[in-house]
Amino acid sequence: MGAKRVEQKASETALFAALRRALAYKAYQDEKFGPDYLAEYFLPPHFRFFIRFNKIRANTRDKLDGFLPGLTEYMIARTAHFDGLFVHALNDKIPQIVLLGAGYDTRAYRFADINAGTRIFELDIAPTQNRKRKCLKKTRVEIPPDVTFVPIDFNTESLADVLEKAGYDRKGKTLFIWEGVSYYLNVESVDATLAFVSHASHEDSVIAFDYTLSLTEENVRGYYGAEAFAQTMAAHHADETLMFSIEEGEIEAFLEQRYLVMVDHLDNREIEWRYLVDDSGSLIGPMTGHFRFVSASPRVTT
Image (cartoon, rainbow, N blue to C red; front, side, top):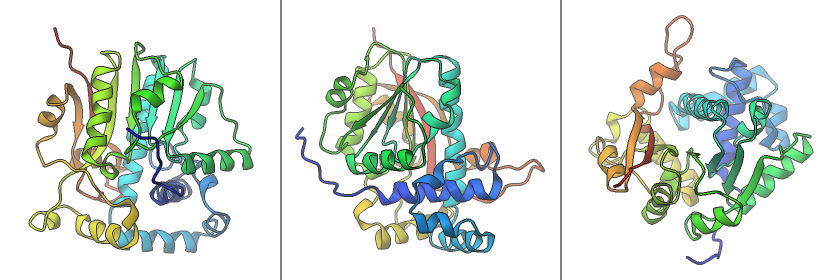
């Protein structure tokens, strides 16, 4: 693959993900629904100023929810899910964690105090990484020595080449976190990433990612918030449209065809009841219904 980059600016969707995490922190300020106390550092100064005020925060969330119903709840659940996997890996002293499309992920910094030597590779396009590093420096958040920034264009560059040049050890057990990324890639890039995990990583490695179901005119109204999501993405994020999806019920076969064995899978209802139920047993809100979580490991062949 060539090395020419097609992206010329930092990811807007990564910025809006940080905004939603920042709003969740302001609203809840707890480990379950709002743990990301660093997210606001990646917002433009005027955003950071305005979200200080309760009324403006409420209006901002109402507007976001109007355009994308259930996405705030989905982001809360997604943060909790991948936080849990990240912390578990650190506690198990796994040698490597690879964040595929890290965006403004803050786990390497929020959980630095429990990292006992796990090497963390943050992969993303150069403009997003450059902006992230500037924000961290400006707010005096120290980048731990275990963190390596690795610029990559997933659609044009080889994951194997880029990672190995950065010091990745293919013989070391690895957790790959692929959060909020797969659906923005073309099919060839998705296949290349999964092929790397299945063939160029330790057999006990795990790739954990979220994906979207395929939406059609026939089924889009059957998933909460899906129709509004599709319309908003087309209207406001035309340069970051959804490119990859999987049919309902096909994930296990999809992984098997790519020499991966499914370890865990959560549909929207399972995600809601695992991550979006408060202490009283009530759901804080429904999530956008066409997203799913899955984890898989390389299929051992003899």
